[in-house]
Structures are given as structure tokens and as C-alpha cells.
Length: 183
Image (tube, rainbow, N blue to C red; front, side):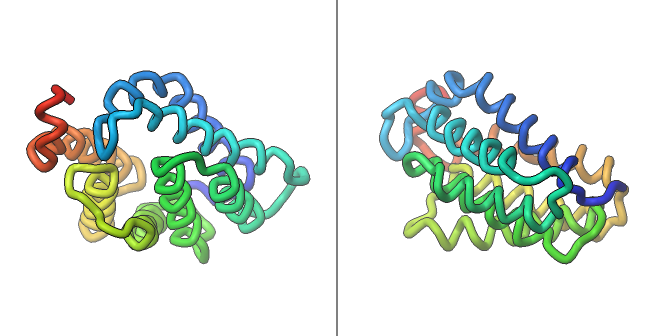
């Protein structure tokens, strides 16, 4: 268990941005719904890079609350395309859901993902199964289950990652266009 500090939140966001930037072309190739325009990875990466830039502008020693606010503002202002907007809403939900928690533990992770599901689903007029929203909902359920089972934070994160992977593997069965394109 660790505390929510501006430094560890920034490190997590920077790591996510780096990973997404490294894999954006892979995500672009997977982009076949709703329109196969091949820009989902790029748009998500640009959105996250905006977050990193916004957070980097904070004063040294900024509070975790200030960092969360910078994340949500950076994501909203930097959102590109539909995927960027959805990403920004997921980040907003994660930040809102983790408010009120001083420590990064299974309960705070569960609350953050629960709020992310709520915010992201509200942002999409007609949510479709087999998309990032499905994966997010499945991940939130895994986080809730981990909390209910009393798993440690490390065990919970392992369960969440495993469910995210499994959920992605199930998406072609939920959204036929994915199966048609071999995604």
C-alpha cells in the first residue's frame, strides 16, 4: 500500500503515456469500430501526452488533489477524436473515484474504477459491447471482487490486469466487426 502523492500519480501517468505512445500504431491497426480510420492509438496517445504536459506544469510539491485536477483538465483539453474523449472521461472518473483516499489500496482502486465506469458510460450516447467500455466495466468488476475478497493491492492489481486481458480477448465475440477483421 502506498500513499497518493503528486509524485507517484505523475509517475503512473508518465508510464502510461510512454507505453501508449510505444504501442499507438498497434492500437491504430486494431481500430475498426465504429469507423476504421486508424487513429485511435494516436488520439489516445495525444490525449495522454496532454495530461503529462499539464501535470508537468504544476509546482513541485503540488497536492494529489491538484495533480488529479491537472489530469482531468489536461485530458479534457487535449482530447482528440472519439477515443481521446472517452479516454479523458475514463481518466476523469479514475481521478474523481480516488478522491477522498489517502492511500493507494484495493478499496481506492475499486472506487476509482467504479467511478470511471459511471463517467465513461455517461459520456457515450450509445455504448456498444465489445469496446473499451466493456473492458473498463469488466476491470471495475474485477477490482470490486478483489476488494470484497480482501485481496492485497498487489493481488488486486494482478487480478485486474488478468481480467483486462481476458476481457479484450472476449471482445470479438461481442462485436462481430472485430471478428470479421481478425482483431
